Structures are given as structure tokens and as C-alpha cells.
Amino acid sequence: MESSTIKIPKKIMDSIKEIIEKTDIYVDEADFVQQAIMKQITKFKNL
Image (cartoon, rainbow, N blue to C red; front, side):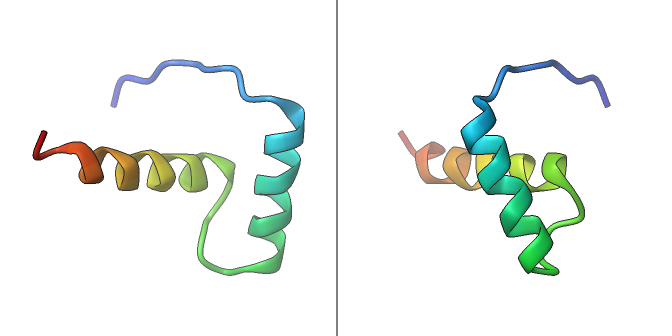
């Protein structure tokens, strides 16, 4: 799969890392971000 790079503020990344450490829901930071983006895309698909 082709990918792109985006800049995420350190404060947000620190929060993401904290969530990943406290839960077993996400594999890593990339998994968290991908799932969050897909959730938002799904909300707007019917526009």
C-alpha cells in the first residue's frame, strides 16, 4: 500500500502513545491514526 507522511504535533502523539500503552485496542501509533481517520471518513461518506 502506498503511504504519505503527515506532521502531528508532539502533544497529540504523546496522548496517542499513552492510549496505546494503556489499552490493547491498537497495535501501534500508525494503527491508532489509521483507525481514527477511517472513522471520520465513514462519517462523511454520504455527503
